[in-house]
Amino acid sequence: MRRFFRWYGASPLNLLTMLGCFALAGYAAAELLPTNAVGILVWLAGAVIGHDLILVPLYTLADRSAMAVFRHRPPSLPAVPWINHLRVPTALSGMLLLIWFPLIFRLPGHFPVTTTLSLDPYLWHWLAVTGALYLLSAAVLAMRLRARRRGTRKAAARGTKFRRYLPKPWHLGDSADR
Amino acid sequence: MKLPASPPPGPFRRSFWRSPIRGPWLTSVFGLVLLVSIPVLFVTGLLSYAAYNPDLSSVNDLTPGKGLLGFYLFSWPTHPVWLYRLNQGVHVTLGLALVSILLFKLWSVLPKLFEWPPLRSPAHALERLSLFLLVGGAVFEFVTGILNIQTWYKFPGSFYPLHFYGAWVFMAGFVVHVALKLPTMIRALRSRSMIGELRTNLARTRPEPPEAGPLVAAAPAEPTISRRGVLAFAGGGAALIALLSVGQSVGGPLRRTALLAPHGQDVSSGPGDFQINQTAASARIRPAETGAAWRLTLRSDSPLGTAPVVLSRAGLLRMEQHTASLPIACVEGWSTDDQAWTGVRLRDLARLAGVPRPSSVLVQSLERGGAFSKAVLSEGQIMNPDSLLALQVNGTDLSPDHGYPARVIVPANPGVHNTKWVASLTFRR
Image 1 (cartoon, each protein chain N blue to C red):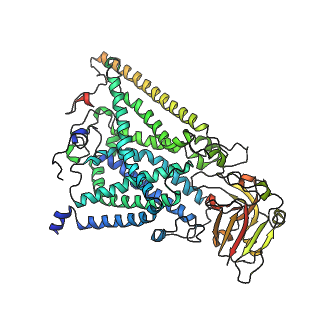
Image 2: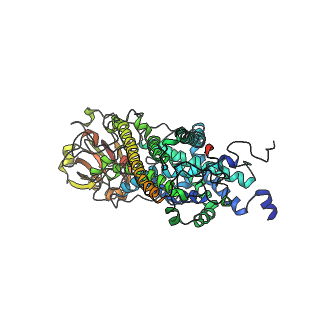
Image 3: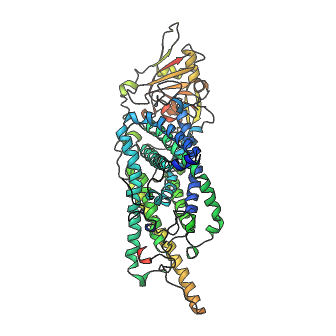
């Protein structure tokens, strides 16, 4: 048993679970693949690569760029985590685009013929929802800033100081490299 | 080839990952949501598959090679009438909403993709292969489903086999992942209190302890969002997506709230009309075929060789008419409110054809070709008193797009099996 563990790296039960998993997946794949083996494998691998190596690096880069751009003007940085007021509406709008891009960009050309519905509204609806998300986010930011400013004035009267929202390297991390 | 023991620079090094909130607790919260929801998606998907009665006839079977994967199939019921409507509304709306949770879950575990060494043992190699099935299968299922409901058929084959067999590949990866990670998830969820996290604002947000596992950054940056903030972000995304699409399944005045769903618009043909996804023009039904010359042919597979019964539309209208309030529900998740359908009961037509106790009926449309130009209905579906060959809807003759001169309407039946422009019914004993 110990020898098995040393060679395999886990218990025999783990191996049995794995074999069961691959037997089931193989059984389904044997029916799935013959229809278009190359196309389906490309799609499966493309799904992993498209998400892990394209989508995630892109949104991470966008997030960091936004923070870097705004950090170069520290005096005007508000005293609340403003980045989330940019991040959240952008991400939500992006998710809606990710899901509905075929309709938004009017790609299924036969759609009006088969459903009698128009392809026109989806782009406008998406833009309107995006605009509403940014507006709502800006309104919440304005409210938080006002509340904070009032709090700062009260605190100043009491003699305590509020810090501006600027990341501090409180833990190992180097804030310039965030 | 021997890999260096220490990871190369870049994402393979733990120091590359800086998020101060990534950690087993956060991942486990997303994992728990998916652990509950993915089985709901899977079961509603299997039920939708069963609703086509693929075992009844090869005509209904879009995946003839299913073998053992069809082990659970049963004759699809006709009660309650909204059964298929609810099933598909849940399947599609929940699936769309989970896109948000899935994206956050995948973000939370991304450092695991760059583990070093990439393969520690045979067990580790197998686990990573199963993760390929899990992530590849998940994204594959979501993408094929999402493109299908928008009728943008760009996937590599027919939707039904891709989404069906793909679901089994995904579930194989899902089950093994749950089996391996359930103890880790429970331990992580117990490591912090949910209520405590919901009370923790940004200023007091600290990383999970480094000993909690490799997901925790070795050199975390200062947090820009709290853990409760990320949970609200992911949950808010799911809620937004659901709110902007659920109206196409609920119908009524709420349909217009489905701003981005395919069937969130009211049909332009006026009040009293309702959604379709196949017009007479797109099915290439010629007006000449549906005019005065149209006849319905009733056949039986009787060994006595009963002669076919041929009926005109006027002849059908002279038979006993029955009205039933039934919805149209599409596999794509949209549905309509109940419509008042009027026509002849299928069981009356069976009797007329000389088969008073049919085991099934083959319904054939005027449409030539097309995956759903014919369908086979079960005994239970034929004998239900609300199962009709409808001639009218909401008090007027069917429009060409709704299947004039006659269409099938059966309670709880998937939309595509409510065949339009019916040409013949062949009852089997």
